[in-house]
Length: 261
Image (cartoon, rainbow, N blue to C red; front, side):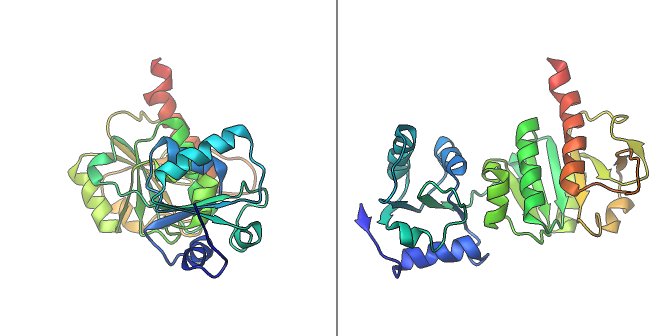
């Protein structure tokens, strides 16, 4: 394994990956759980960087051996070089550039979540963790403000954003796709419609959740849809989009999967 220094172009590439949205086709991670997921699902790893200045547990050494075999290129760096681009304070001294998986519309399945112009990476990542836990089959990112290759999404999603089929679409493309494929569309609505436990989430469904400040785009209401809201007490009229999505998606999952068993 070749040792490289802080001025090497690969190290420069990792600095850009960890701090900018410049490279759309790659995801940066120094999260051990994400690395395990990448290995389990055999995601493409163009570059792997490992510091020699760490003492690793046996299970981590085994993971490193697997990642070395999986990565196209693997380099050794010093701890001081690693710390120029690390994102986790309690890091494991291992980082990877992961190729962004490409999914097709046909892979989205029948339990889709549509995120309309979300802009906070932590919210997007939180939603992905929920979707992974409840068995959602796909995600449509409509005109995303927070781009899918943002490393903060991967960190908060614990890597689940890389294994759940995701397709980027403009609004009209998403609307056409859902209508043509006969999905029942449920719009996350703060006040109107039926409460989230009164719907029957069967068949091909798409649950739509909107921007943190502005909600979903108005034109959604001009097409066939169902409105769904979460009853609330207190002084606020809406929940954080990650929390609201989790509540409604889990109710749908309970009806579709868990209550059948």
